[in-house]
Image (cartoon, rainbow, N blue to C red; front, side, top):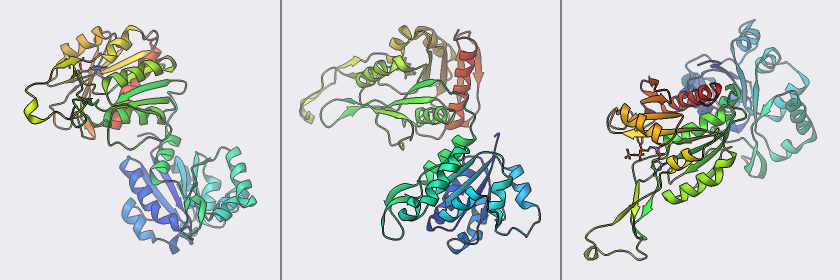
Length: 394
Ligand code: CTP
């Protein structure tokens, strides 16, 4: 991973306990995390806790190593301060360097991300507001704070942003914005076709692949519209989200949002058939011998007919590595790329965090990929999208 080292500064706020989870999550995402704590932070959590999580000594003292305040920032791509107190934010603005963290801020040349956490009156204080504005003008990124109940028992704006929001902002700050200017429409999840008010036909799709694509595209600077069937995936901040249930609703949503899209990636497992009649009342068991089905519209195929210059990427969920089937689907649906996944392979397909894919382009070029995390697969697909764009959308 490029830009993989993060300097995590922790200052003296009760929100410091959440820094443990921030460190853990960044490591899970593949980053190396070096923690620096102020003396006040050590009143709330111990360096040992962070050492156990990151597997690296936590630095708290400016003088334990004469050059750590210079070398650490040289090695790091991002300075993330979470939580950042009013005192630290004001110090950063003035350039006061009286501990290791504030010295590092002066030697660090890469992006900085600050997650403030404090009492709401402290947050509104003119000195803090002035510091935040001036730091923002210098290009420092802020995430939060948010409103809510504070540790002191009061309510207001001052709570540190959610751990997920901070982790996502840190990753976004480190990700090259090579999709800036693109608006990507992504579909995800299963669709659900009602039989009666109680029962439905659906499939095993978890939505994980589509959500990973939306997340990766957002990190890379694209605008993202996500049209999703029912899933248990966490909502993605920054994505324009449309929730649908059945295939016909997904079709309407895709056609409505297509005009503003520069690319469409259809990762949804759309039901191929739906009950011909939806019973308005529950069908009793003595009253049913069969269900008549009708085909749903192939949304991807329909989009392929009106795509113009848009890049169109579809999936081919197969039971077996059926390259010829995938090639036929690519041609029939007028796609630029098709992502073939054999859902019978271990670690591929539905409800897992990994996938094994083969990507085929219009010229018939076949690229096989090994077992990867879905977020990595998402990035490979987006690399493919950029490649098609560079070639002039052939
Ligand atoms: N798709 C779609 N509308 C449908 C069915 C599928 O837009 N009614 C899209 C899927 O989102 C996927 C692609 O078509 O990107 C291929 O889906 P898949 O289920 O693999 O193939 P089908 O074309 O449905 O053919 P079959 O199920 O017979 O293999």
